[in-house]
Length: 118
Image 1 (cartoon, one colour):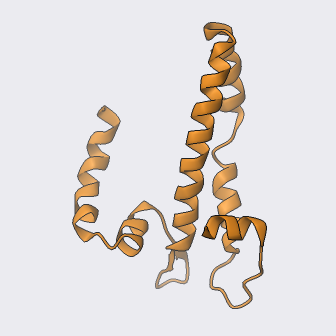
Image 2 (cartoon, rainbow, N blue to C red):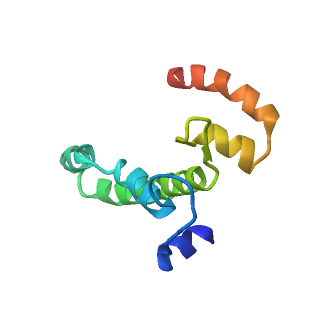
């Protein structure tokens, strides 16, 4: 609901901390996921898989963008200001501050090490 509120009713945060607004940080994170690789990937998939590949690309794209949007939105919501005045955020801050799950937080570095091999 918070994401829809920010999207439909953008507001200026006059007293908010940080260099850019929450909406600007969200849009930067979202724009970083869409690039030329997506354009090249579509043409390659259609040439190799036929027109039916287009449906599955749309489906995968919708699921991927929804996941990225929720990750970026939570990252902006649970970011903090460090001792040097810089903003810090990301998945570990979401686990710690959003879900308040310290057990999973201590387990995640091991998962991150082995995830590339899966």
